[in-house]
Image (cartoon, rainbow, N blue to C red; front, side):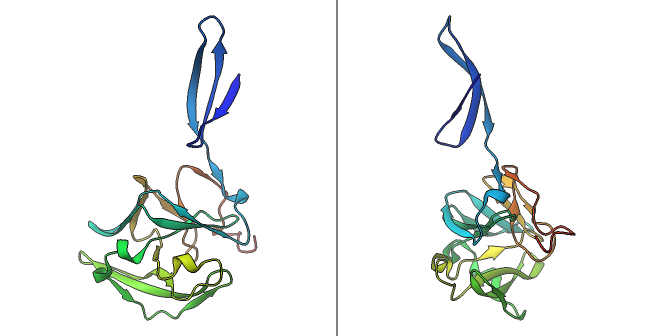
Length: 183
C-alpha cells in the first residue's frame, strides 16, 4: 500500500500492480484539523467560491476572500466590499467590540427580500498589524444567512459569539459549544 498527496491536497491510497504497471487508487479529501491552526491566528487569501444569501437574495458572492485560521475555530471568511451588495447592508446600532488580534469590529445589519439580520455582519475599519488586508471586508455569521463554500452549505460555529463556517473538510472539536469557553 502506498499513499501519495497531489497538488490539490487529495490523498490517494492504493497499490501498484506489478504485472500491469497500473496504479489503482481511491481519492480521499484531506481534512483540516482546526487544532492545527495557529495562535495567534493567521490571515490568508482563499480562492474558494463563497456565496451568502438572505432568503433568496444574494448578498455576497466572491472568489477573492480572505480567511482567518485560529486554533480550535473553523475559518472565518472576509469578503471584499466590492463583492457585497452594499445596498442591503447598513451600519448597525450595536456597539463595537474588540478582538485582541484584529482590532475593533463594526457591526452591520442586512435587510433584503422582506427579511432582516441585525448585527450579523462585521468588519474592521482599522485592523491591527498583520490584518490590514481585510480593512473594510465583510464577515457574515452563518445564521440567519444561507452561506456556501464551493457549493457546500456551511454550518455555523457553535454558540452565538464566534462566526466560523464549518464545512465537511474540517475536523474539530470546535470552540463555541457549551463547556469550551476556556479552551
